[in-house]
Each structure stands twice: as structure tokens, then as C-alpha cells.
Length: 77
Image (cartoon, rainbow, N blue to C red; front, top):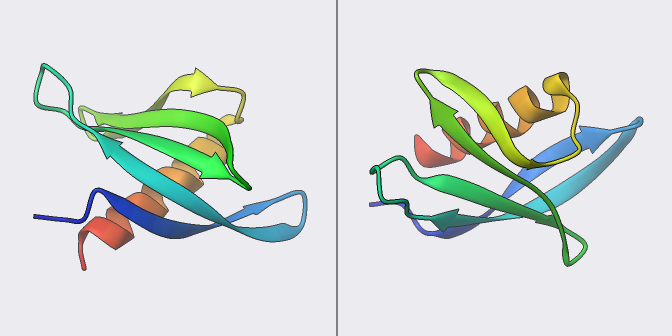
């Protein structure tokens, strides 16, 4: 089982950041991932039917997919 806290890389506006991710279990057995940047919550995402979706936050679609792909990479370790 994966760690429920991990870091992923994230690029936005030409800058690179490290995002802290916390896994949040849900009642429908599909985990959600709460993402923090510099101590501030920036989004909550989950993978639904093979597609990453933002449940909360103001990221644009390419950023959501970037975070989702980084989470997939981390979970595959």
C-alpha cells in the first residue's frame, strides 16, 4: 500500500514547484488526493473512470492532468 503522504513535481507559469499530496479515502473506494503548495491547499483531485478530475480548486485542465500524471507515477513506485 502506498504512503498516504508524498511529494510530486508541478510546473505552473514557467516555474517548478514541489506539491505535497495527502491521500484521503472516500466512501466509494476511490481515493481523493489533497494537494498543498507552500502550505496552502491548491486542489483536490481524484481519478474517475480513468480520467483525473478536480473536485476543488482553480487549476486549469492541463494542470489537473499534470498533477494526476505525477500522482500516477508516484503510486506506481
